[in-house]
Amino acid sequence: MDHTESNHPPHAIIIGAGIAGIAGAIRLAVQGFAVSVFEKNDYPGGKLSQLVNGDFYFDAGPSLFTQPHLVKEVFDLAGEKMEDHFSYTQVPVSCHYFYEDGTRLKAYADHDLFAKELNEKLGEEENKLSSYLNRSGRIYNDIGKVFLNHSLHKRSTAFQKSVFKALKATRFSYLFGTMHDMNASHFKNEKTVQLFDRYATYNGSNPYRAPGMLSLIPHVEHNEGVFYPKGGMISITNALISLAEKKGVKFYFGAAVQRIIFHDNKVHGIVVNDENIAADIVVSNMDVYFTYKHLLNREHSAHKVLKQERSSSALIFYWGMKKEFPQLGLHNIFFAKDYKAEFDHLFRLKKIYADPTVYINITSKCEPGMHAPEGKENWFVMVNAPANTGQDWQAYRNSYRETIIAKLNRILNDDIGKYIETEDVLDPVSVESKTGSYMGSLYGTSSNSRMAAFLRHPNFSKKIKGLYFVGGSVHPGGGIPLCLQSARIMGGLVQEDQKGKKH
Image 1 (cartoon, helix red, strand yellow):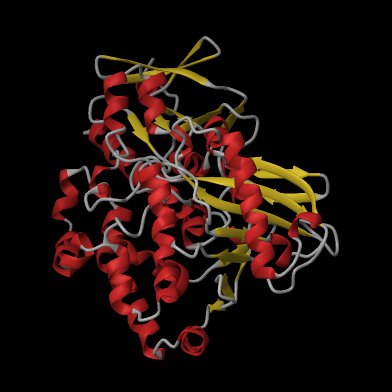
Image 2 (image 1 turned 180 degrees about the vertical axis):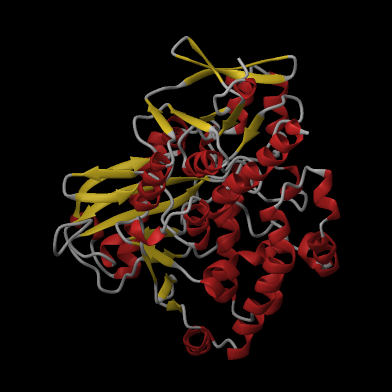
């Protein structure tokens, strides 16, 4: 059935109500599609959802909010005021850093304060920070935006002015040097190097192998800012869902898609609950590997996706703490002593590491009494983990728990274990079952090679007309900003293809 030949608006089906799926649905509704979203879980948001345990509320997945303009862009496109649905504030300290030798650092949003902190605590020359962040900004604006705003798989992209500008701005070290090499050549203290190396983990990569180009990531956090969405990260999902519904998007929860229907190299709809549902276009917000393997039954194409190394995963403890810790902030990092060995375990040995870097997010710091009762805190405690290849995760969970508590006791000089009132755990196996991320990889594929950005799966199918892709497993990558950009790229591709049909 082809709606375009009747008076009905064309029908778009989106598989998965992750953040990219919801944003994609809004963009297609604005273009005039009747949009239906089918989600296997009984809640929206994918990784960007919420977990509740007693009186404690936790953001289940992503905990860092940057680039709010990308959320605003969706509201502007839909002709709505974002402020009516969603608000946020800038965080004065982007992260609190803790090292084993007792060094503590605050990464202030104010560059002068941050530079002073690095100078006083680590002996870095004050001008080093601004020169590093200026270069990070140049790489982002001159080169990064080409990757983030365009499909790399369309010939027309090659003729954009911005591409020539990007090629001109590219340096040998951006592609052939590692992120760690770039950081180590700029800063003199290994603690500062470690601080800036950690940004490779923002897309599940290894700073000792990922290209220097990834040093554009700190620009987003330190030049543009870190923000806190009122109500926690779940408020991003809720705001976009309410906007989508206002635009007429229909959501179907607890509705796992069984198959994508296609023949003559053209998409015709999907099968849900053994029922055929016709569509003019289908957008998969499901992991691209599972889309090929299960929904298209194309084993060969699924295995091609696996030629790229999977990104890291995570093991997360959600702890309701019956005490407040004034020395901690919204975002906190407790570094491993030997960072290189930690990444070696994650990517080469595919094992947990005896002294992991620990990240703690505490949203009750920003809204006291809202996500945890008065005098208590909600701790989202995360360590990087290898993608799931069949490791004994029960044993790993127990081991990591002990290691994390011992590390925090050491650095905070306290007995953390006795304050844990409630506990939930998420490991790579449950990441896969809840969010459909193959092997529990949080960002699909890693960026541990200089060609990784070009090898990510495109936002459209080259073989099946009318089939598109959004989300963290395809171009431009994982994390909230990149997922929102994947929805924008997909929307542009659909618009171009629809124009082509009318001529």
